[in-house]
Every structure is written in structure tokens, then in C-alpha cells.
Image (cartoon, rainbow, N blue to C red; front, side, top):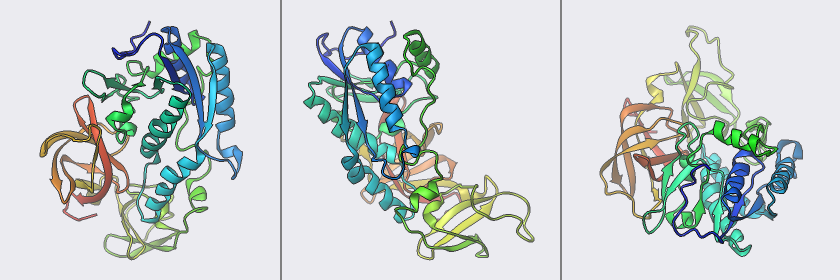
Length: 377
């Protein structure tokens, strides 16, 4: 039996409700807990109404898969619709960030506001003593409240997406996959006869699906055409809205073959909101893409206190980025991060996640940047 790192106060007759997504990860999480002898149920949550065309959202198929898995394991599956809560607490903020010219990450907010808030409270109403998910992360239960840790599988670690969840929200929560890698999970699913063992991992956001992101976003946010300019101020193209672009972007700029310019690809290096200008430069490692520092207006520390600052911590500014060493200090009620080595394409609106070794401490939305050349972003 695989080690589940279960908390000492988890009793054999406790009821565990697993968030069932219809994917292989939640399937195996439920199976492992059932095999360990616990009373287990599943809960499938719907977070999006497919009024704009079901071909883009896999919710119907995911529910069918979740039901088949639960039938195979021999557990009950509940359903809940959290679409209204998702719209109010996640999607509306997602749109606000794009309107402000930033590039948000809704998955972090979804975990804090939906999965470990609305979902967890609903599970309690169904009689859950504990909730479990298929996240690749671990919890240290030794203290008064749990501490979030990275998964054993560094390639799949999802602690970055859990950085805004509080320690109190993690109380009575389980991550059965924390000690496993993806290959092991699929092997377990196959041996257990779970129909999701070979199901492709979902990517991106359900409500966007396989359609072009710009096509989806323009339904909700109106963009204004504006100039695409070089760092020297020369206009070399036109964009259809700043919100369709992000720092470090190469594809979809519609520029190339500029007279008197070399053949190196163009990248977005800045979005000038007041003038509605998209600023670009050539070269993957152009100095304008390299950042020495960032700031967050505030950081949500998981334990509610955070480390004593200044401190030397590790930081990720995007998922799957290797840990980067930085000096973290307080400034103007928020935090200021000075990287040991300049980092590429640090993007306002994204989340900066802070670590102390294996422990995830929390994170905050990036609100300001400083390039390696000292330019403010």
C-alpha cells in the first residue's frame, strides 16, 4: 500500500469526501482512501454554465467519467453547482485584471475561493469529516495547523496553485497523491481498473477549452486597437487590445520582416496602459525582458503571519519555474523581492509564490517590476 502520510487525528470511521473531477488524479485519490478502509464519497462540482457552447467545456463528459469511477470503486457521487460563486469570486476578478492590462491566474483564486472554501463547506453539509483532492502536494500535520509542502514529484508539484489557501482551510484536508508521481498514479489506476487511467490531463481553464483565448476574452472585455512600438518608439504594427498579450509573448504579434531589422523574433516586453501601446523588442533574452526585482502590494501568508522579514527565500513567478533565490523585504505595506539572478518575463497580475525549502509559505499578486536595467514596470 502506498504511503498516504495521514494525520494522527484521522479516525478509521471518519467520512472523507473527495473532489472528483473526472480525471485520473482524483480517481486514484478516492481509490487509495477507499482501499485504506475509510468511508469515502465523491463530490463533482460544476463551476461554469456552458451557455456559450458545450463543445468547449468537458463538464458533461467529466461528470460521466467521475460517475463511472465512483461506480467502479463502489462509492456514492454527489453533485453541486458552484457556477454563481465561481463567477462572483473568481471569474469577475479574472476579467477585472485583464481590463487593467494585467495577466491573471484564475487557478490560484479558484482553489482559495471555491475548492477549499465553498466546496469544503458543502462537503461538511454532506457529513464530511475530511475533504480530499487529487492535488500533487503534501501537508505537514505536526503543528497546530497544517503546513503546505511541495509534492515529492517536483515535475507535478502543484503547491504554486495552493499558495493563497490558508492553513485553517487546509485543516481536515488530505492530499493522497503527495508522495506519488504521475506514472505511478496512472499505473495504480490501470491496475485498479479505473476507466480514467489513460485519460489526457486537462490543460488551461475549462470555460476556455480548445478555442482561441482571444475569441473567448473578447466576449467579455472590449479591447481598443493601438500601436505596437519598439523600445525606441517606432511603430511597427497594430494590436487589437492590450489584454490579448502578455509579457514575454512571441506568437500572434503579426509583425515580422521589418525593414532594417534583423530576423530575430519579436517579444512583448511592456504594456503601456496610458498610451495603449504594446512595446516589443527582439531576442528571447533581451535585457528589457530580464527583471531584477518585483513587488506585491500584499502577500497572503498561509499561516497568517509569514516569516520574519527581511529573509532569503525561494520564489516562483509562474508554475513549474525552478525555485529562484531572492531577498524578500517589506515595503509600503507589501513585499519587495530582489532576485539573486535576473528573471525573464516577470508578469504583473501573475502570482509570486514564496518557499522556505520544501514549505510553501504563501504568495501574492505581482503589482510592480524592475528590469535588470532599472526600468520600472
